Length: 518
Image 1 (cartoon, rainbow, N blue to C red):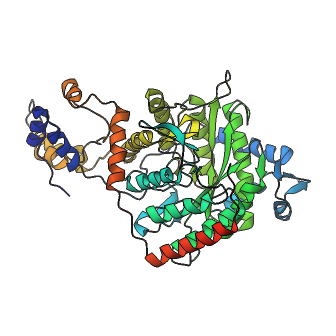
Image 2: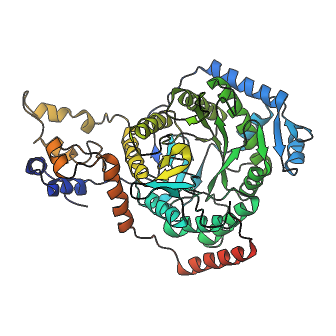
Image 3: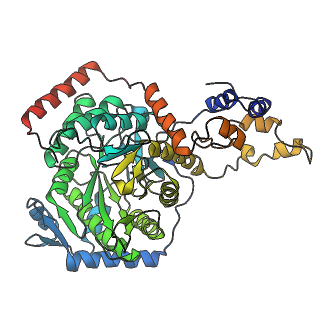
């Protein structure tokens, strides 16, 4: 930790116009690392209890009258029937209140996801918010090479960048799709990368039940050979909206629930295409689909940790393309977050979402318009918090850095207003005569480092100094940042025997699996 710079020294650095003064100021800033955010503000509510009850009643109506289609997973049908559902072929209908009773009566309100390094354990639920990076993009983008297919090297780069960021609490899962590895085998490389290059919490594979089982086994090895019933993965299970749960997702959900690993049960909805176009209709369908999926996990193993997920975007009625940062998804987020709190389970939604192909003004506006409701709405698990571009088709290196900077601002914002003696600063005002500035006061000097959030990508210099230093825009500055961070990366400790066991398992499993690209 460096010494706190004096105000006089800071002013001299700015007057000099030199890079050294500004670099010294940046270097002096001490970043507080926290394993997850704890919000001090009440979640922003947009509906009355009466309106929320209407949505809950409507979702029960959908579950009772329309039901859920279960595709390609006949094993789930007798399980639902034994729990009290009405099964007609592959259609499952639920008596009013059944799903809510099962989920609310069994699923935990919060849970600990253990990291390989215990200081990085996260608590998901309550007043906590966990930021995780982008998920699922087949393409990557950077200013040097433009848009291209993602590789395993890119995947590892983003795991390293997430590990190094003090503002990302979670390593994520499929941060990008390493398309240079066969589909049938890449899950092994991805889980290994999370265990090898990071010691933050991570997600497992969900593209097949067998791949979920591989993820659990790799986690067992990585955590020393026995999970001791600890939850070490929180993995994404998407509904096939509208009102369908398919065999791939249910098989993965069953594996994770049986092993006490957490699942994020998420309807993935493009409003107007995969649901009604109205925001209230989206909320009703989201609740119905999520209740059915969460009920399945609790039938498999009562008490298994589960997260109520919501991913709802608007769409262009002219082109059919998804749109982000618009008002309607924010209204859905606020609504479904409140429904999750009433149900008593953690909630996942939001992120830093954009349709833009570049880290430009559109990306900034749309991402900010998604991130603000995410934090204000009280989301517990935030996937796609950094890197998302092109409606999720790409992850951007520069966008990743710029998003992390915004996440840092949220770390400060959620602390709320400090009304302690230091925050109220009455002694500073008593000791400082009217008309005198506060730059040299003891209070200012004591709070100099921590008074305001300091961006590591924004430029606040004069036009002349900015021009002298190259006239770089935000994306160009972020380009230098991610390269520097990767150059400074140092891997966390991993026992050599554990590493060897992981690699042995991966080698054996790859030999058993066919090469499948797609």
